[in-house]
Length: 603
Image (cartoon, rainbow, N blue to C red; front, top):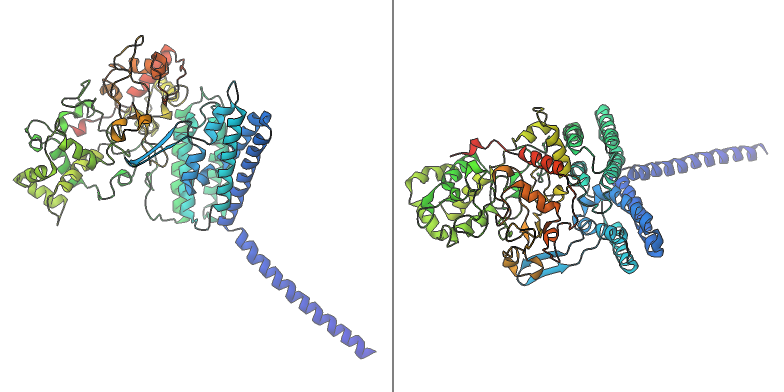
């Protein structure tokens, strides 16, 4: 009996030990599983999938019961904005589909590859739902398309490759997107829910940032970020038209760029390359903000001071033209912000656009027929009304000019003088024309405090009620779309042939149509910068308007549509803006504050 009892105790002990080992094993496994679960990749994906699923559910509710469309659209859109920081970075194509404007999309690769796509997505759905007479068939169609696209994204998106620098990039992109398109009404054309949606974006950024809390060596920096996000959310409360965008960007966006750089240092992150905005940028309004090579031709190489100096010399050289009478500077005078002050430039058919900030775009000429500055120069050289020569002659004229030999040896060591180097040098000079030293820049960067209330109100109107910034995006105020800067937009606004509001007819210039003969692209022109606009009159591709007051009156009426020019594909909203005389004065005052000190560029 004693032996039997002892055996029972031993057996029990062995059982207890075995049980302990088994439990320890499973505990160890569960810890490994737990570690895997709490990796930032997994947590980011879980959050993204949850938010996407809710966005889909609300869309499906619209399809099931059209009477819920108003309520459930806004709920679905809110969750779309929650996933926006991630989706816009990891899947730009699908993000573009879901957030595209309600405008026909034309993709022109060449004459044999032209795609015309009808839009869909949240903006299209918004315009279908929030209208006097809802079309239930169209609403269900677009709700289904958006839902299916989100489902596809949910099933296929991958987070396994994400590293801390990816997260930092997408985080900064989202901050920049809020400032430059989010608070302008760019993607909420009817409801103007831009402020509310920007709050959702910041809330989402705070959630994702918490996933990376362990990455912070400096815990105070993490807390500073949380405080800054909460302060941004608080200041985003308010009415769309009266919102103070100037002080929001100055107080919050600029501050967040500084904090972002502190995080890069704290996490000891290095980036494999630079995107459109430099990795160390601390301001959106600086000559050090943008990575110029991002916008350049892939073979352009490094932009050096030697190339710039050589390019400037070539820019002013009339010997490069066949009649030895014109140079690049003939149509682009530094004292006129590199325009010529003429309605139509000498020997050509359009108004000369400014070259300032032209480096920060993805296409050139009013019709976007050139993809790089080097390509644009070819057209000027070969145009019978301009240089009226060819690349071989251009090359020989420079090679045979002894004054250029040493400059090329310094600028392009171990290379022959060819037309490629000649064009690259001129392009390098043009790429250097990005001063960012205007009164507005100095003020938003905190260098001085001299902006008037009228100028500040003008900026807020430009980016709000007047909707100028939905086409002219800060900080360059041209049509290259932030924060990815992959596309320079073209628009049909209905520019008239003459300055007439009674019997107006559209300009005879068909613009982009001449490039590929796509009928849907008639009268489309690239969106130019409004920087230095007070000294670049006359305005529009045909110089039809002599004053900024005339330009603002045209937009205030609803563009061409407001003066009797009705075009099916007008991209400018046709509704009147109802700007008062004082508001127009304020907008012009703001635009005048964008004048740079360009004396440094004079010959």
